[in-house]
Length: 124
Image (cartoon, rainbow, N blue to C red; front, side, top):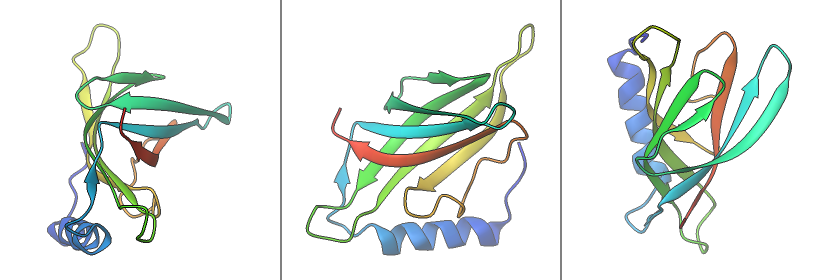
C-alpha cells in the first residue's frame, strides 16, 4: 500500500470535520461506483458495513458511512478498505481511508486497472 503523507491525512480529516457536522447521520450501507479502465465498464454496486464486496479483483469493505441531513448541503463520506485479491497470494491492502461523494479526487484509490468512488450513503 502506498503511504500517504501526514499532511494529506490531516487535510482529509479537516475536510471531513468541515464537511460533516455533528448532525451527520450514520448509515448502514453505501452505493459505490467502479470503473474498469481496460474495457471502460462502469458498475454501480451496494456495500453494507463490514461485508466485503467484490469488484473485479478488488475486495471492498465499508467500515463507516455518514450522510448530512436533508436540510443541509448534500455530502456523503465513507471509510473504505480495499484489497487486491490474486490466486495463490495473500490479499494485498491497496487503500484504507475516507472517500467523499462530492470530491472523489480528494483521496482516491490509485490503481492501474480500477477506480472506485462513493455515490451515496443509505440506511440499508
